[in-house]
Length: 154
Image (tube, rainbow, N blue to C red; front, top):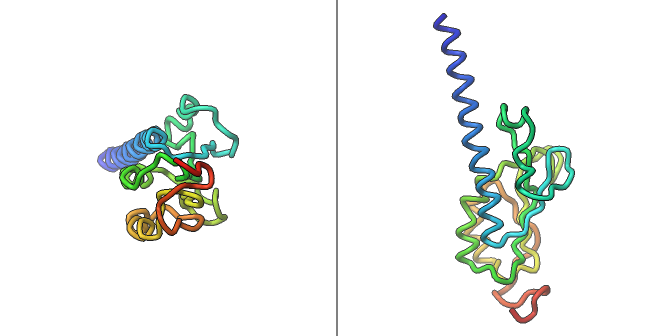
């Protein structure tokens, strides 16, 4: 009887942790959008999603606390982004749950596209890299902050 109660408690504590992590994942998606990040969102079968309303998922995702939406890539090319906005994104980027093997087979990470980003300099990338262990920077940082290819005169 005690063993049964212990197993029951372990299962529910694991599910509680997973639900907490899923709630942070969903909040992170909303906050990253608010801060100006461009995101590619997919469901586990890699079909596109129209909105966050679709991100709740079916009964299986709800019960097992599996994300119905994954974010394999976050783009930081928004010309209105500031270094303060990017620093504010750090906890939300860390809260995203990567889908194993979605970006590169056998690996789990969130890709951060910094190519043509007016705010992402080499020094900012070096500052943020240790804080973003679950993310990988893609592209080359700009030499200095300034106009981007997309918006030459922001």
